[in-house]
Length: 79
Image 1 (cartoon, rainbow, N blue to C red):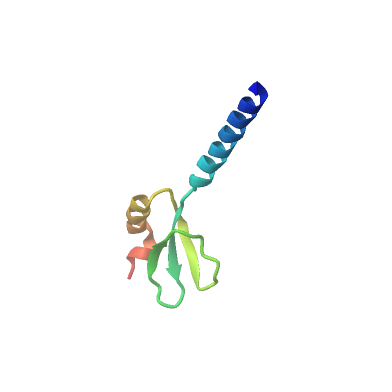
Image 2 (cartoon, rainbow, N blue to C red):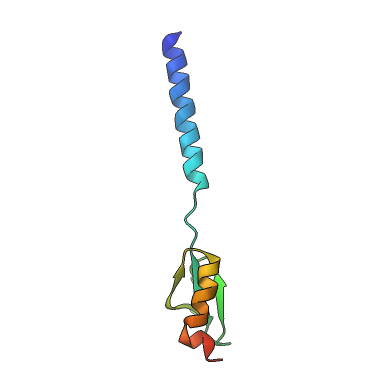
């Protein structure tokens, strides 16, 4: 009985740890520029198309940082 309780506790702990890790997602925000419109926007996924590119060092940990950073990126403030 004691072995069963220990095994159950270990299994529960492992399951909760795995669930907790799955919930933690590393979110990054990117300042990207559309090649046709020449406008900058903020996206939460790295662009995979050739029509939008990450400008300068436009990778930020929060959306607020990305908004502030976009104001200092030269190609985003020219238009």
